[in-house]
Amino acid sequence: MTDDNQLPTRDTATYEGQIPPSLERVIPAMRRFGQISFWFQLVLGVIAGLIFFFAGFVGSNTGEANTLSPEEGPGLFFAITGLVALAIGMYWALRYTQIAKRLAIPDASLRPTRSQTVGSLQTGVLINLVGMLFNLIAAQIITGLLMVKVLSSEGVQFSPAALSRLVQPIDIFVVLANTNSLFAHFVALTCSLWLLRLVHNLKSS
Image 1 (cartoon, helix red, strand yellow):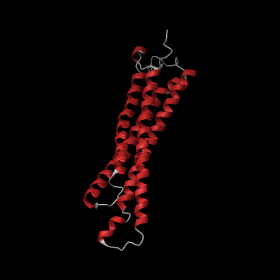
Image 2 (spheres, rainbow, N blue to C red; image 1 turned 90 degrees about the vertical axis):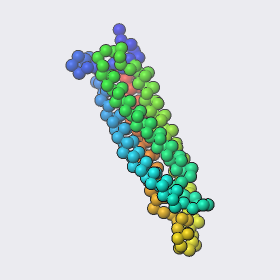
Image 3 (cartoon, rainbow, N blue to C red; image 1 turned 120 degrees about the vertical axis):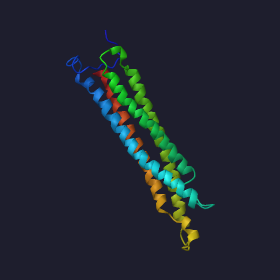
Image 4 (tube, rainbow, N blue to C red; image 1 turned 60 degrees about the horizontal axis):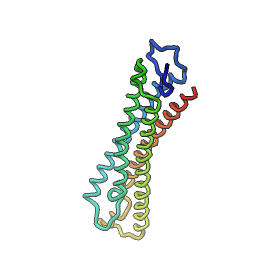
């Protein structure tokens, strides 16, 4: 007798033809979307991390007192916090590929149950939602500081001392890095939600 909470799967040779086609989509989908989520987060996360590191280095060496810059302060803090959440999301995306391997085990007692699989996917959704929240807060702070810079730069005499009050290329790079991190969270969140929908639909298959 099969546990109704069990996610059935098959070994290619042993179980062929015994499982509905909808269930046979679970294993390759978990593997494929886990890899897509991992690589998107890795590539965009590395790019964002390098930009944040460079921005923090530039800000600590060229920043002046009483000057608000996107490359330092609370905006950078929340952006890096979102990047940390992205690193956790990368680890969790690899768990999806491990779940796919465990679902392929012929022994049904060794496979993860439906509730365990749904729980892992829900955790992945939560990780990326929290990361997106941090990046959105960072975006609000960074764009606000850029607006202050633009408004305060009117009528500024061009001099080495006044350059810090103008929008610098590094400021735009910080915006780009935060956007990369936000986009990576979005892709990972989409993969998790699609897999969650797929697993939920198995109950009615």
